[in-house]
Image 1 (cartoon, helix red, strand yellow):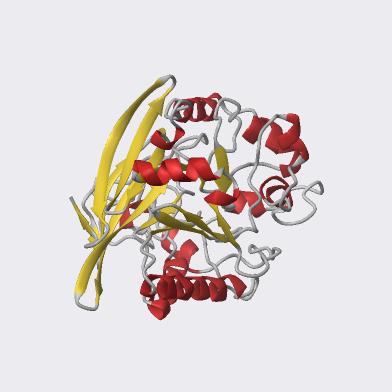
Image 2 (cartoon, rainbow, N blue to C red):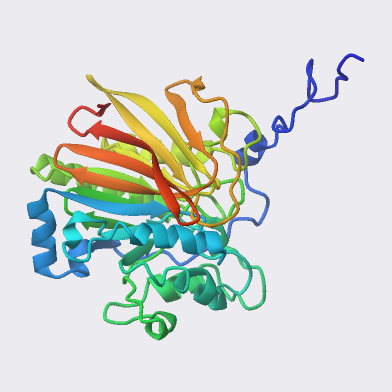
Length: 386
């Protein structure tokens, strides 16, 4: 019997992954889906030197590079989340810390489910009990949601655990013997040797990410543009640092297809970020995201004046929640971006930055086993892969 047509297809029947839900969902939030939150004050800047002693900073500088871990979608409390954290802990060199990762950057969805405040015990602190390193974080959509009367305000538990005033620690952190950073808010600039990291908060939308919208205001977008302008001024004065931007919702996802493969890309978010980068004439060397529960890598080619640079957009959402299928086929190109690789399963990213290059290594984990799935190295001066 020939395939039956329906109202949304003109030829072949729908396959398992051909449901055209992603594109429409990514274009607008549901009414009331985006929850207002407390914005940080001032420039919202912190530095690794605020948390590590001067000798440790000198050791990193003398070593010639810095590395850090990154992943998202971890906050489930599952054995898989424990296993990923334990795998990362094996990268830490306690005798010579500068040789290993200096910190973990959680890319959001730190805690799933209702009652976020209580959830931090079993979905954050216990899974990371063997990871003896500082953990920084940007919030994901599930961190800002309010799913019960116990969630009294958006991001309340995130602020409690990551944004205590300087000199103070969260009560749960103290009870677990875990030192937590004093972040300035839900979005921030983080100055490290060799690299600046900008963390953004893309809101509570399930399939819609943005840094500005009538429901949440435009303060963050204004802040991002000014922060990039500050970086432009510093670069003109001779301070040369790589730039990584971290945001939970991925600008690109689903293998650039219109539907299927879990969470979609976020064109509104991409447009807003691009506008800020264009205004300041400062572009990231890498964009790190999560939200999709897998690994995906996109390479975007930008013609910036007389130069052509390639920017990796990496999705690293294998931190512990149930994985989603990786998009296929690999090699799809739309406009200036190409979907180059993907992997279903758990894992984490290691970012290593020196004066001359940035390396992105994705490690896949299966229980106690781990292996490097791929390594990508970019020349910072030219923005080209080597």
